[in-house]
Image (spheres, rainbow, N blue to C red):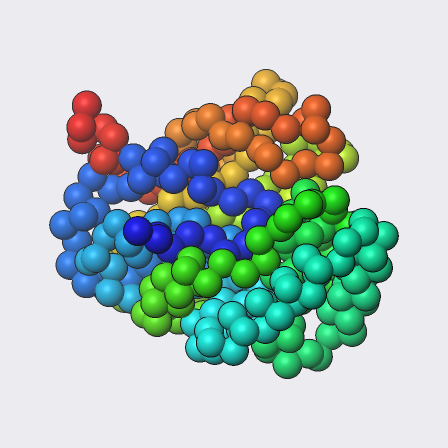
Length: 304
């Protein structure tokens, strides 16, 4: 049976961490009534799709991202699925019919140029987004300071550009999701009653050359990380629960206490994660990430 899952590959996607994230949810989360789930940095949506399938008590969800093209994708999958599948099948058929790498690269570059024109209708914009995500180097989404997609061609023999069964499941779940585009703080007004926030912001770089901020032209620097922490304080003071993921700077440099000091008032856990998206294969592999939350009892501790 097909399950809903992310329809794009995304830097920092949480598919490999889902079980560890689930274990760090509040111990009684499954017993909450009429839950509102809010994800201010939705990205690839692995956590969203998992929770909506795992916890039927989530009656309403709100997702947000500052990347407008990504938000258009979510809205198109939710609201115009039939037209999108037809369009994706067309571009997949055309691309796979090209017999040489040179012809495929030319097709890719033309699609990238067209996508960067901006202002496309939602179906074409989402189709190009999907196509570039499936055929670019390492499935990376990166833009320059002008907001133009600049990832080079990837040499994949038989990429799946259209997965209609997964898209149908995703679209079904997205019917109960409100989709926003804007600043993460704009999501507060949607909190009500039993509300749970999950934050997966652009990660703080572990080195001068690494960056998880290139999916949008706007930088997410230390000042933004501090502003996010203050937003978590606001959520905590209002009686809502939150969990936040980020890079473990201390794992790279024992003297780097940025997050340990910033979130010292909250619970900080460290989990092992795999990084599969990196331009340098030698920098992929396992490393620790932090999970921050404002509650003591988790599902994991409850079991133990």
